[in-house]
Image (tube, rainbow, N blue to C red):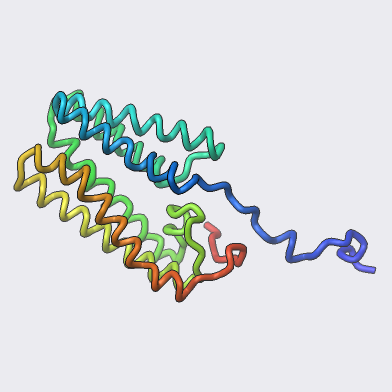
Length: 209
């Protein structure tokens, strides 16, 4: 009698990764929209520097909420918060609004660079960033990674074009009402690819680093 027969366990059951707890979609959307809404409200009432401080405080609150609900902090919100805090602090210290304006550029280029590096190293960086929201085959992850990497580059270029050629008022409005809708539309456009390469949630993919 084998060890498996003696214990009465199925080998496939021991290798299946436990399902990670995810945020409720509505809560997740509120956590993404909240800092932007507060940033816009603070700018409308005060100025870019007060708005920057409010943005910094609000992203810390979103991290705290994520940790309370999930007992962990997903990678993408953590990286986003770090960039906000770095560029926000520099903006307030040097009293230079240009620094907060280039924050989205730095963030999007950082994500793009990570995805391109993952492709070169054959590591599913996008899978880590999505934090269990999507389940596709390795080929599906590869194709999605290419698309998202170029999309992030496009957003970085777009941010540079807007802040360099438009007023601060227009940039704030575009940051608040432009980037997130564009990202949502792009994500929805990936649905056919996700459906085509969809796999079972517990099907293993290569995530070894």
